[in-house]
Image (spheres, rainbow over the protein chains, first blue to last red):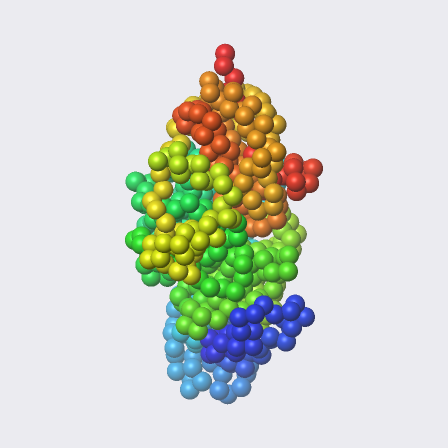
Length: 382
Length: 174
Protein backbone atom coordinates (compact mmCIF):
# COMPACT_ATOMS: atom_id res chain seq x y z
CA UNK A 1 0.00 0.00 0.00
CA UNK A 2 2.64 2.39 1.15
CA UNK A 3 4.84 1.34 -1.69
CA UNK A 4 2.17 2.07 -4.28
CA UNK A 5 1.73 5.55 -2.89
CA UNK A 6 5.44 6.22 -3.04
CA UNK A 7 5.52 4.85 -6.56
CA UNK A 8 2.83 7.35 -7.45
CA UNK A 9 4.91 10.04 -5.84
CA UNK A 10 8.00 8.90 -7.69
CA UNK A 11 6.06 8.66 -10.89
CA UNK A 12 5.05 12.30 -10.67
CA UNK A 13 8.55 13.40 -9.91
CA UNK A 14 10.46 11.18 -12.35
CA UNK A 15 14.18 11.90 -12.40
CA UNK A 16 14.19 15.66 -12.65
CA UNK A 17 14.08 17.59 -9.38
CA UNK A 18 10.74 19.22 -8.79
CA UNK A 19 10.28 22.93 -8.37
CA UNK A 20 9.71 23.65 -4.70
CA UNK A 21 6.17 24.94 -5.16
CA UNK A 22 5.04 21.55 -6.46
CA UNK A 23 5.96 19.75 -3.25
CA UNK A 24 2.59 20.24 -1.63
CA UNK A 25 0.81 18.68 -4.59
CA UNK A 26 2.63 15.41 -3.96
CA UNK A 27 0.46 14.80 -0.91
CA UNK A 28 -1.18 11.40 -1.08
CA UNK A 29 -4.15 10.96 1.22
CA UNK A 30 -4.17 8.09 3.66
CA UNK A 31 -6.96 6.06 2.15
CA UNK A 32 -4.96 2.96 3.05
CA UNK A 33 -5.17 3.54 6.81
CA UNK A 34 -6.57 0.70 8.86
CA UNK A 35 -9.65 1.62 10.96
CA UNK A 36 -9.13 0.98 14.66
CA UNK A 37 -11.34 1.58 17.65
CA UNK A 38 -9.30 2.58 20.69
CA UNK A 39 -11.17 2.06 23.97
CA UNK A 40 -10.06 3.94 27.08
CA UNK A 41 -7.74 1.76 29.14
CA UNK A 42 -8.77 0.76 32.64
CA UNK A 43 -6.46 0.81 35.65
CA UNK A 44 -4.61 3.45 37.66
CA UNK A 45 -2.47 4.47 34.65
CA UNK A 46 -5.30 3.96 32.16
CA UNK A 47 -5.72 7.58 31.11
CA UNK A 48 -1.99 8.12 30.51
CA UNK A 49 -1.76 4.81 28.64
CA UNK A 50 -4.72 5.68 26.39
CA UNK A 51 -3.30 9.10 25.58
CA UNK A 52 0.16 7.65 24.86
CA UNK A 53 -1.23 4.86 22.65
CA UNK A 54 -3.42 7.29 20.74
CA UNK A 55 -0.39 9.50 19.98
CA UNK A 56 1.80 6.55 18.95
CA UNK A 57 -0.84 5.07 16.66
CA UNK A 58 -1.63 8.47 15.12
CA UNK A 59 2.10 9.10 14.48
CA UNK A 60 2.48 5.68 12.83
CA UNK A 61 0.53 7.04 9.86
CA UNK A 62 -1.17 3.69 9.21
CA UNK A 63 -4.17 3.93 11.58
CA UNK A 64 -7.42 5.86 11.39
CA UNK A 65 -9.48 5.97 14.57
CA UNK A 66 -13.01 4.76 13.90
CA UNK A 67 -15.93 3.12 15.63
CA UNK A 68 -17.24 1.60 12.42
CA UNK A 69 -18.30 -2.04 12.68
CA UNK A 70 -15.47 -3.07 10.33
CA UNK A 71 -12.82 -1.53 12.60
CA UNK A 72 -10.29 -3.46 14.62
CA UNK A 73 -10.53 -2.81 18.35
CA UNK A 74 -7.94 -2.50 21.10
CA UNK A 75 -8.71 -2.45 24.81
CA UNK A 76 -6.73 -3.01 27.95
CA UNK A 77 -5.59 -1.73 31.29
CA UNK A 78 -2.47 -0.11 32.70
CA UNK A 79 -1.01 0.11 36.18
CA UNK A 80 2.39 1.51 37.04
CA UNK A 81 4.75 0.68 34.19
CA UNK A 82 2.68 -2.30 33.03
CA UNK A 83 -0.02 -2.64 30.41
CA UNK A 84 -2.31 -5.48 29.39
CA UNK A 85 -3.94 -5.23 25.98
CA UNK A 86 -6.05 -7.22 23.58
CA UNK A 87 -6.42 -6.53 19.87
CA UNK A 88 -9.65 -7.78 18.27
CA UNK A 89 -10.37 -8.12 14.58
CA UNK A 90 -13.65 -6.78 13.11
CA UNK A 91 -15.24 -10.24 13.68
CA UNK A 92 -14.53 -9.84 17.38
CA UNK A 93 -11.78 -12.48 17.52
CA UNK A 94 -8.62 -11.83 19.48
CA UNK A 95 -5.60 -11.12 17.28
CA UNK A 96 -3.32 -10.96 20.30
CA UNK A 97 -3.59 -10.64 24.04
CA UNK A 98 -0.35 -9.48 25.62
CA UNK A 99 1.22 -8.11 28.75
CA UNK A 100 3.85 -5.36 28.54
CA UNK A 101 6.40 -4.25 31.10
CA UNK A 102 9.26 -2.44 29.40
CA UNK A 103 10.39 -0.61 32.52
CA UNK A 104 8.22 2.46 32.09
CA UNK A 105 4.64 3.06 31.01
CA UNK A 106 5.63 4.96 27.82
CA UNK A 107 8.05 2.17 26.84
CA UNK A 108 5.37 -0.47 27.45
CA UNK A 109 2.82 1.45 25.37
CA UNK A 110 5.38 2.05 22.58
CA UNK A 111 5.90 -1.73 22.40
CA UNK A 112 2.13 -2.28 22.28
CA UNK A 113 1.74 0.31 19.53
CA UNK A 114 4.43 -1.38 17.43
CA UNK A 115 2.71 -4.74 17.92
CA UNK A 116 -0.61 -3.28 16.75
CA UNK A 117 1.00 -1.65 13.71
CA UNK A 118 2.76 -4.90 12.80
CA UNK A 119 -0.41 -6.97 13.29
CA UNK A 120 -2.48 -4.62 11.12
CA UNK A 121 0.03 -3.84 8.34
CA UNK A 122 2.72 -6.51 8.46
CA UNK A 123 5.31 -3.75 8.77
CA UNK A 124 7.37 -2.66 11.75
CA UNK A 125 6.36 0.43 13.68
CA UNK A 126 8.78 2.99 15.09
CA UNK A 127 7.19 3.86 18.44
CA UNK A 128 9.89 2.00 20.40
CA UNK A 129 12.72 3.42 18.32
CA UNK A 130 15.44 5.76 19.57
CA UNK A 131 16.94 8.81 17.95
CA UNK A 132 20.51 9.94 18.57
CA UNK A 133 21.96 13.19 17.29
CA UNK A 134 24.67 15.78 17.81
CA UNK A 135 23.86 19.25 19.16
CA UNK A 136 26.05 22.29 19.50
CA UNK A 137 26.75 23.48 23.03
CA UNK A 138 28.81 26.65 22.79
CA UNK A 139 32.09 25.68 21.11
CA UNK A 140 31.43 22.01 21.85
CA UNK A 141 29.25 19.36 20.30
CA UNK A 142 27.62 16.71 22.43
CA UNK A 143 25.49 13.64 21.68
CA UNK A 144 21.89 13.25 22.79
CA UNK A 145 19.32 10.45 22.80
CA UNK A 146 15.53 10.62 22.75
CA UNK A 147 12.41 8.65 21.82
CA UNK A 148 10.92 8.97 18.33
CA UNK A 149 8.81 11.95 19.46
CA UNK A 150 11.54 13.74 21.41
CA UNK A 151 10.44 12.45 24.81
CA UNK A 152 12.99 11.09 27.28
CA UNK A 153 15.78 13.39 26.10
CA UNK A 154 19.17 12.42 27.57
CA UNK A 155 22.58 13.98 27.07
CA UNK A 156 25.03 11.13 26.51
CA UNK A 157 28.36 12.98 26.32
CA UNK A 158 29.67 15.87 28.42
CA UNK A 159 33.17 16.07 27.03
CA UNK A 160 33.35 19.78 26.29
CA UNK A 161 34.84 18.64 23.00
CA UNK A 162 33.52 17.59 19.60
CA UNK A 163 31.37 14.43 19.63
CA UNK A 164 29.74 13.84 16.26
CA UNK A 165 28.41 11.33 13.72
CA UNK A 166 26.48 9.18 16.23
CA UNK A 167 25.11 5.86 15.00
CA UNK A 168 22.83 3.70 17.10
CA UNK A 169 22.93 -0.09 16.78
CA UNK A 170 19.88 -1.93 15.48
CA UNK A 171 19.32 -3.53 18.90
CA UNK A 172 19.36 0.00 20.45
CA UNK A 173 22.08 -1.08 22.87
CA UNK A 174 25.20 0.56 21.48
CA UNK A 175 26.18 3.96 20.23
CA UNK A 176 29.17 4.47 17.94
CA UNK A 177 30.40 8.00 17.37
CA UNK A 178 33.38 10.12 16.43
CA UNK A 179 34.98 11.78 19.44
CA UNK A 180 37.69 14.44 19.36
CA UNK A 181 38.29 14.41 23.09
CA UNK A 182 41.77 12.91 22.66
CA UNK A 183 42.55 15.84 20.36
CA UNK A 184 42.05 13.59 17.33
CA UNK A 185 39.01 12.00 15.71
CA UNK A 186 38.57 8.52 17.23
CA UNK A 187 35.70 6.04 17.15
CA UNK A 188 34.18 5.38 20.54
CA UNK A 189 31.46 2.95 21.58
CA UNK A 190 29.02 3.73 24.38
CA UNK A 191 26.94 0.95 25.92
CA UNK A 192 23.57 2.65 26.41
CA UNK A 193 22.55 0.32 29.21
CA UNK A 194 25.69 0.18 31.35
CA UNK A 195 27.08 3.59 30.36
CA UNK A 196 30.47 1.98 29.68
CA UNK A 197 32.45 3.87 27.09
CA UNK A 198 35.38 2.61 25.08
CA UNK A 199 37.65 4.04 22.42
CA UNK A 200 37.90 1.29 19.81
CA UNK A 201 39.59 3.05 16.88
CA UNK A 202 42.37 5.62 17.22
CA UNK A 203 44.52 5.20 14.14
CA UNK A 204 46.61 8.11 12.83
CA UNK A 205 44.68 10.58 10.69
CA UNK A 206 40.91 10.87 10.69
CA UNK A 207 38.64 8.02 11.80
CA UNK A 208 34.97 8.71 11.30
CA UNK A 209 31.46 7.98 10.17
CA UNK A 210 31.05 4.54 11.75
CA UNK A 211 27.83 2.66 10.89
CA UNK A 212 26.65 -0.59 12.49
CA UNK A 213 25.98 -3.61 10.29
CA UNK A 214 22.43 -5.01 10.58
CA UNK A 215 23.70 -7.75 12.95
CA UNK A 216 25.53 -5.08 15.03
CA UNK A 217 28.75 -7.09 14.85
CA UNK A 218 30.60 -4.95 12.34
CA UNK A 219 31.19 -1.28 11.70
CA UNK A 220 31.77 0.34 8.33
CA UNK A 221 33.82 3.51 8.63
CA UNK A 222 36.30 5.84 6.97
CA UNK A 223 39.95 5.99 8.00
CA UNK A 224 42.97 7.79 6.56
CA UNK A 225 45.93 6.09 8.26
CA UNK A 226 47.08 4.67 4.92
CA UNK A 227 47.73 8.20 3.69
CA UNK A 228 44.36 8.62 1.99
CA UNK A 229 40.75 8.28 3.18
CA UNK A 230 39.39 4.79 2.51
CA UNK A 231 36.39 2.73 3.52
CA UNK A 232 36.92 -0.11 6.02
CA UNK A 233 34.91 -2.73 7.85
CA UNK A 234 35.93 -3.71 11.37
CA UNK A 235 34.43 -5.58 14.34
CA UNK A 236 32.20 -3.43 16.53
CA UNK A 237 34.29 -4.43 19.53
CA UNK A 238 37.55 -3.67 17.72
CA UNK A 239 39.82 -5.95 15.75
CA UNK A 240 41.79 -5.59 12.59
CA UNK A 241 40.06 -3.43 9.97
CA UNK A 242 39.60 -4.71 6.43
CA UNK A 243 39.98 -2.18 3.60
CA UNK A 244 37.15 -2.09 1.08
CA UNK A 245 38.54 0.63 -1.15
CA UNK A 246 41.95 1.74 -2.26
CA UNK A 247 41.40 4.74 -4.45
CA UNK A 248 42.36 8.36 -4.87
CA UNK A 249 38.78 9.26 -4.00
CA UNK A 250 37.68 10.29 -0.51
CA UNK A 251 35.06 7.92 0.84
CA UNK A 252 32.58 8.80 3.60
CA UNK A 253 29.15 8.04 5.12
CA UNK A 254 28.75 4.28 4.63
CA UNK A 255 25.25 2.79 5.09
CA UNK A 256 24.52 -0.96 5.09
CA UNK A 257 21.92 -2.82 3.07
CA UNK A 258 19.41 -4.54 5.38
CA UNK A 259 20.91 -7.97 4.59
CA UNK A 260 24.41 -6.69 5.41
CA UNK A 261 25.76 -7.81 2.05
CA UNK A 262 26.23 -4.39 0.51
CA UNK A 263 27.13 -0.83 1.39
CA UNK A 264 26.30 2.51 -0.12
CA UNK A 265 28.62 5.40 0.56
CA UNK A 266 29.64 8.80 -0.64
CA UNK A 267 32.83 9.28 -2.61
CA UNK A 268 34.39 12.37 -4.04
CA UNK A 269 36.82 11.89 -6.88
CA UNK A 270 38.21 15.40 -6.61
CA UNK A 271 35.21 17.64 -6.69
CA UNK A 272 31.56 16.71 -6.61
CA UNK A 273 30.56 13.82 -4.34
CA UNK A 274 28.53 10.92 -5.69
CA UNK A 275 27.03 7.78 -4.19
CA UNK A 276 28.45 4.33 -4.84
CA UNK A 277 27.25 0.84 -4.05
CA UNK A 278 29.52 -2.11 -3.35
CA UNK A 279 29.67 -5.50 -1.67
CA UNK A 280 30.49 -5.28 2.04
CA UNK A 281 33.05 -8.01 1.37
CA UNK A 282 34.89 -5.75 -1.09
CA UNK A 283 34.92 -5.64 -4.86
CA UNK A 284 34.15 -3.16 -7.56
CA UNK A 285 31.92 -0.24 -6.59
CA UNK A 286 29.16 0.88 -8.89
CA UNK A 287 28.18 4.53 -9.15
CA UNK A 288 24.46 5.18 -8.74
CA UNK A 289 23.00 7.56 -11.25
CA UNK A 290 20.85 9.73 -9.04
CA UNK A 291 20.32 12.78 -11.25
CA UNK A 292 22.15 15.24 -8.96
CA UNK A 293 25.77 16.28 -9.33
CA UNK A 294 26.29 16.54 -5.55
CA UNK A 295 24.97 13.63 -3.47
CA UNK A 296 25.99 12.82 0.10
CA UNK A 297 24.86 10.99 3.26
CA UNK A 298 23.04 7.97 1.78
CA UNK A 299 20.77 5.89 4.04
CA UNK A 300 19.45 2.51 2.89
CA UNK A 301 15.85 1.81 3.94
CA UNK A 302 15.20 -1.17 6.25
CA UNK A 303 12.99 -2.79 3.58
CA UNK A 304 15.93 -2.57 1.18
CA UNK A 305 13.97 -0.84 -1.54
CA UNK A 306 14.98 2.78 -1.21
CA UNK A 307 17.85 5.07 -0.63
CA UNK A 308 17.49 8.55 0.82
CA UNK A 309 20.32 11.04 0.51
CA UNK A 310 21.21 14.70 0.69
CA UNK A 311 21.72 16.50 -2.62
CA UNK A 312 22.54 19.99 -3.63
CA UNK A 313 19.95 21.51 -5.94
CA UNK A 314 19.80 25.15 -6.90
CA UNK A 315 22.40 26.09 -4.30
CA UNK A 316 20.59 24.58 -1.32
CA UNK A 317 20.56 21.19 0.35
CA UNK A 318 17.56 19.00 -0.39
CA UNK A 319 16.69 15.39 0.30
CA UNK A 320 15.85 12.87 -2.39
CA UNK A 321 14.66 9.27 -2.50
CA UNK A 322 15.99 6.75 -5.00
CA UNK A 323 13.96 3.61 -5.51
CA UNK A 324 16.05 0.57 -6.42
CA UNK A 325 13.43 -1.50 -8.29
CA UNK A 326 12.55 1.30 -10.70
CA UNK A 327 15.76 3.30 -10.64
CA UNK A 328 13.71 6.44 -10.19
CA UNK A 329 14.73 9.34 -8.00
CA UNK A 330 12.36 11.92 -6.52
CA UNK A 331 13.28 15.10 -4.72
CA UNK A 332 11.68 15.57 -1.33
CA UNK A 333 12.06 18.87 0.52
CA UNK A 334 14.87 21.02 1.86
CA UNK A 335 16.86 19.29 4.58
CA UNK A 336 20.03 17.39 5.45
CA UNK A 337 21.14 14.04 6.81
CA UNK A 338 17.93 12.04 6.39
CA UNK A 339 17.63 8.68 8.17
CA UNK A 340 14.92 6.08 7.64
CA UNK A 341 12.63 4.87 10.37
CA UNK A 342 11.85 1.19 10.87
CA UNK A 343 8.76 1.47 8.64
CA UNK A 344 10.83 2.58 5.61
CA UNK A 345 8.29 5.36 5.19
CA UNK A 346 9.09 8.02 7.78
CA UNK A 347 12.40 9.89 7.87
CA UNK A 348 14.10 12.08 10.39
CA UNK A 349 16.28 14.91 9.12
CA UNK A 350 17.59 18.33 10.10
CA UNK A 351 16.96 21.69 8.57
CA UNK A 352 18.53 24.86 9.91
CA UNK A 353 19.67 23.01 13.02
CA UNK A 354 16.15 21.79 13.86
CA UNK A 355 15.11 18.14 13.92
CA UNK A 356 12.06 16.93 11.96
CA UNK A 357 10.18 13.73 11.19
CA UNK A 358 8.80 13.47 7.66
CA UNK A 359 6.12 11.12 6.35
CA UNK A 360 7.30 10.45 2.80
CA UNK A 361 3.84 9.21 1.91
CA UNK A 362 1.90 12.33 2.85
CA UNK A 363 4.71 14.88 2.73
CA UNK A 364 3.80 16.06 6.23
CA UNK A 365 6.66 16.92 8.58
CA UNK A 366 6.64 17.47 12.34
CA UNK A 367 9.32 19.22 14.33
CA UNK A 368 10.81 17.08 17.10
CA UNK A 369 12.26 18.89 20.16
CA UNK A 370 11.00 22.34 19.10
CA UNK A 371 13.01 24.07 21.84
CA UNK A 372 16.33 22.66 20.68
CA UNK A 373 18.62 24.13 18.00
CA UNK A 374 22.05 23.35 16.62
CA UNK A 375 21.06 19.74 15.89
CA UNK A 376 22.88 17.72 13.23
CA UNK A 377 23.57 14.16 12.04
CA UNK A 378 20.57 12.31 13.46
CA UNK A 379 20.52 8.50 13.46
CA UNK A 380 17.32 6.47 13.99
CA UNK A 381 17.24 2.94 15.38
CA UNK A 382 14.61 0.35 14.42
CA UNK B 1 56.32 5.13 -7.24
CA UNK B 2 55.17 6.95 -4.16
CA UNK B 3 56.70 10.07 -5.47
CA UNK B 4 54.99 9.79 -8.85
CA UNK B 5 51.62 9.22 -7.27
CA UNK B 6 52.04 12.13 -4.94
CA UNK B 7 53.11 14.39 -7.76
CA UNK B 8 50.00 13.37 -9.61
CA UNK B 9 47.90 14.20 -6.60
CA UNK B 10 49.11 17.74 -6.53
CA UNK B 11 47.69 18.28 -10.01
CA UNK B 12 44.10 19.55 -9.86
CA UNK B 13 42.09 16.35 -9.62
CA UNK B 14 39.33 17.93 -11.66
CA UNK B 15 41.42 17.51 -14.77
CA UNK B 16 41.93 13.81 -14.24
CA UNK B 17 38.85 12.39 -15.90
CA UNK B 18 39.52 14.49 -18.99
CA UNK B 19 43.19 13.53 -19.00
CA UNK B 20 42.53 9.84 -18.61
CA UNK B 21 39.79 9.85 -21.22
CA UNK B 22 42.23 11.55 -23.58
CA UNK B 23 44.73 8.76 -22.89
CA UNK B 24 42.05 6.16 -23.36
CA UNK B 25 41.17 7.65 -26.72
CA UNK B 26 44.86 7.57 -27.68
CA UNK B 27 45.60 4.04 -26.56
CA UNK B 28 42.39 2.18 -27.21
CA UNK B 29 41.65 -0.85 -25.12
CA UNK B 30 43.65 0.30 -22.12
CA UNK B 31 40.67 1.67 -20.29
CA UNK B 32 36.93 1.32 -20.42
CA UNK B 33 35.24 4.09 -22.31
CA UNK B 34 32.58 6.28 -20.78
CA UNK B 35 33.18 5.19 -17.20
CA UNK B 36 34.40 7.16 -14.27
CA UNK B 37 38.12 6.71 -14.98
CA UNK B 38 39.25 8.14 -11.66
CA UNK B 39 36.38 6.78 -9.64
CA UNK B 40 36.53 4.32 -6.78
CA UNK B 41 37.76 0.87 -7.63
CA UNK B 42 39.27 1.82 -10.92
CA UNK B 43 42.68 3.01 -11.94
CA UNK B 44 45.98 1.65 -10.67
CA UNK B 45 46.46 0.62 -7.07
CA UNK B 46 47.64 3.65 -5.19
CA UNK B 47 50.77 3.85 -3.21
CA UNK B 48 50.55 6.53 -0.55
CA UNK B 49 52.95 6.99 2.33
CA UNK B 50 51.17 5.88 5.52
CA UNK B 51 50.69 8.36 8.32
CA UNK B 52 53.06 8.03 11.29
CA UNK B 53 51.74 7.19 14.78
CA UNK B 54 50.22 10.10 16.67
CA UNK B 55 52.78 11.66 18.97
CA UNK B 56 51.90 11.14 22.63
CA UNK B 57 50.94 14.21 24.64
CA UNK B 58 50.34 16.61 21.77
CA UNK B 59 47.28 17.75 19.87
CA UNK B 60 46.07 20.93 18.23
CA UNK B 61 42.96 21.71 20.31
CA UNK B 62 42.73 18.81 22.77
CA UNK B 63 44.98 17.45 25.52
CA UNK B 64 48.58 18.52 25.05
CA UNK B 65 47.74 21.60 23.00
CA UNK B 66 50.06 23.54 25.33
CA UNK B 67 52.91 21.57 23.74
CA UNK B 68 51.97 22.72 20.25
CA UNK B 69 52.69 26.08 18.68
CA UNK B 70 49.57 27.07 16.76
CA UNK B 71 49.99 28.74 13.36
CA UNK B 72 53.80 28.52 12.96
CA UNK B 73 52.77 29.40 9.39
CA UNK B 74 49.43 31.02 8.60
CA UNK B 75 46.71 28.72 7.24
CA UNK B 76 46.59 27.67 3.59
CA UNK B 77 43.25 28.66 2.05
CA UNK B 78 41.25 26.72 -0.55
CA UNK B 79 38.63 27.43 -3.19
CA UNK B 80 35.06 26.24 -2.66
CA UNK B 81 34.78 22.43 -2.54
CA UNK B 82 38.42 22.19 -3.61
CA UNK B 83 41.43 20.52 -2.08
CA UNK B 84 43.93 21.88 -4.59
CA UNK B 85 46.75 23.92 -3.07
CA UNK B 86 46.76 27.08 -5.15
CA UNK B 87 50.13 28.30 -6.43
CA UNK B 88 49.61 31.55 -4.53
CA UNK B 89 49.51 29.54 -1.28
CA UNK B 90 52.74 27.64 -1.99
CA UNK B 91 55.08 30.09 -0.21
CA UNK B 92 53.30 29.18 3.04
CA UNK B 93 53.80 25.48 2.32
CA UNK B 94 57.49 26.11 1.61
CA UNK B 95 57.88 27.91 4.96
CA UNK B 96 56.05 25.02 6.65
CA UNK B 97 58.42 22.55 4.98
CA UNK B 98 61.34 24.43 6.54
CA UNK B 99 59.85 23.76 9.98
CA UNK B 100 58.63 20.22 9.33
CA UNK B 101 61.97 18.91 8.18
CA UNK B 102 63.07 18.88 11.80
CA UNK B 103 59.79 19.15 13.76
CA UNK B 104 56.66 17.02 14.15
CA UNK B 105 53.72 19.00 12.76
CA UNK B 106 49.96 18.56 12.76
CA UNK B 107 47.86 19.61 9.77
CA UNK B 108 44.14 20.14 10.46
CA UNK B 109 41.79 20.43 7.49
CA UNK B 110 38.67 22.59 7.76
CA UNK B 111 35.74 23.51 5.54
CA UNK B 112 33.12 26.23 5.36
CA UNK B 113 29.61 25.42 6.55
CA UNK B 114 28.22 24.71 3.08
CA UNK B 115 27.45 21.02 2.59
CA UNK B 116 26.81 18.15 4.96
CA UNK B 117 28.87 17.47 8.07
CA UNK B 118 30.28 14.05 7.25
CA UNK B 119 31.19 15.03 3.69
CA UNK B 120 32.90 18.14 5.02
CA UNK B 121 34.98 15.97 7.36
CA UNK B 122 36.11 14.03 4.29
CA UNK B 123 36.82 17.26 2.42
CA UNK B 124 38.82 18.66 5.35
CA UNK B 125 40.92 15.49 5.43
CA UNK B 126 41.53 15.80 1.71
CA UNK B 127 42.78 19.37 2.24
CA UNK B 128 45.13 18.27 5.01
CA UNK B 129 46.39 15.46 2.77
CA UNK B 130 46.90 17.89 -0.14
CA UNK B 131 49.24 20.05 1.95
CA UNK B 132 50.96 16.91 3.21
CA UNK B 133 51.53 15.75 -0.37
CA UNK B 134 53.24 19.05 -1.17
CA UNK B 135 55.44 18.72 1.91
CA UNK B 136 56.42 15.16 0.95
CA UNK B 137 57.30 16.42 -2.53
CA UNK B 138 59.60 18.94 -0.89
CA UNK B 139 61.38 16.14 0.92
CA UNK B 140 59.77 16.42 4.36
CA UNK B 141 59.89 12.99 6.05
CA UNK B 142 56.44 11.37 6.30
CA UNK B 143 57.02 10.53 9.97
CA UNK B 144 57.01 14.25 10.81
CA UNK B 145 53.47 14.94 9.54
CA UNK B 146 50.18 14.05 11.25
CA UNK B 147 46.80 14.99 9.76
CA UNK B 148 43.24 15.28 10.94
CA UNK B 149 40.02 16.90 9.82
CA UNK B 150 37.57 19.01 11.75
CA UNK B 151 35.19 19.46 8.82
CA UNK B 152 33.00 22.47 9.56
CA UNK B 153 33.18 22.18 13.34
CA UNK B 154 35.72 24.97 13.92
CA UNK B 155 34.57 27.91 11.86
CA UNK B 156 36.68 31.06 12.07
CA UNK B 157 33.77 33.48 12.26
CA UNK B 158 35.48 35.46 9.52
CA UNK B 159 33.57 34.04 6.57
CA UNK B 160 33.63 31.12 4.17
CA UNK B 161 36.94 32.02 2.54
CA UNK B 162 38.80 31.89 5.86
CA UNK B 163 36.96 28.74 6.94
CA UNK B 164 38.21 26.72 3.93
CA UNK B 165 41.67 26.12 5.28
CA UNK B 166 44.40 23.82 6.43
CA UNK B 167 45.87 25.08 9.68
CA UNK B 168 49.06 23.97 11.32
CA UNK B 169 50.63 23.22 14.65
CA UNK B 170 54.29 22.52 15.37
CA UNK B 171 55.36 20.56 18.41
CA UNK B 172 57.37 22.82 20.71
CA UNK B 173 60.82 21.37 21.29
CA UNK B 174 61.92 21.87 24.87
